[in-house]
Length: 229
Image (cartoon, rainbow, N blue to C red; front, side):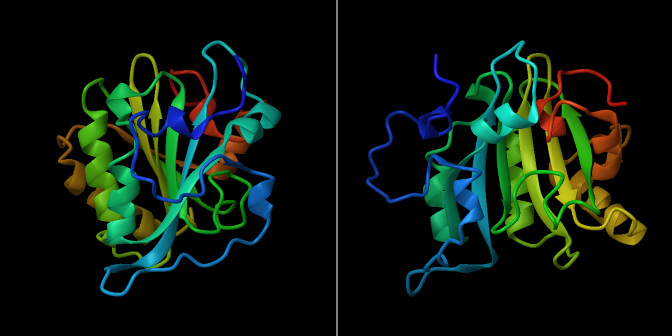
């Protein structure tokens, strides 16, 4: 089986919309500047342009920088509400994705990697979900992010849903790990939009700490399920 990820691992196989997208571009291709996303007259422009990424690792295969780079694919880019729903309606829901799959929605120009300039001084809030909750929580989280409900300016970099064998993980990345007021606001907003019980355990982890404790991966999303160190 090829290690290259086809865009249809993330998009529904019965897609017949005929829409043009930017799928199956790999990370090296993303070093090249991309043109602005055009918004049709009358459409509802978002405050930021976003990119949708997909990655999947074969279960049991050790994550490395090389295979993460190879498996990270750009599905498409959107700058309006209408463009977002055009993609979202075609994306496979988290509940239907294979284990060790990740969908990343990040602001355009920010790669879903710790080392990206927008991410390197930041961190992420991590929420671990029991099976069956991911699709609803993911949709609520994305809509809150696109609708600027976090109210932290340009601090949000993106969000990830990580599908694992025994659990699913939602992560929200921000630029400045040391900005306690911002990280607290992100946490409180996340609790509200996900309607989390008061006793829900949430963890904030800086990307610097993730780099220190992970030697074979450029992304904590590719680690095996289990306690974070």
